[in-house]
Length: 253
Image (cartoon, rainbow, N blue to C red):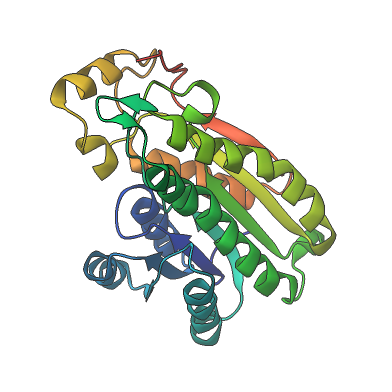
């Protein structure tokens, strides 16, 4: 699919990977709908690229449904959804204060996994009603997993579980939505220069950067966006989770 002239929804678009994807889509001529719960940052990013901003919690069924409906009214049915909204707090199962608060685990899964599925189901419904394009394609859905889905570190039980869920659901959903001409993919990024990374202590950032085989640096959000664009364009890609990590394999700590 060529993105020019098509409606594309990007969640987590106020910053980081989502902002990079939204900016590249706008450069390529797409009608970009930016979704995030940070209203101020979202409005600024949407204005910068000429996009349409919709503030919502991706895991809220009503709020997300209203956001998708508003996007369809304003820009037309979506042809692309890129799920980038996510959080990555680190917390041990057994810490100094005792067992991990169950609500903390629930919050991570709610945003990263349930929020991803919520937006996916709503966008898929809108895509399925659109007329087919070349090869009877109606849409592309790309979600963001993580290398932590495969080798999560100490303190990443909730995060790894949530991203592992994104990985696990990609193939069965791709198989189900094939009948509608909708492709479903996921990217498992390694360590990227994003605001999430900046929350780590400097010594942790330095150690992580040095652990990447090649290129020996943090990946750039634009490199993530470039892969997303290729996935949209390459109709042979479906049901796959692609690691984008410079051959990184996370150590236990």
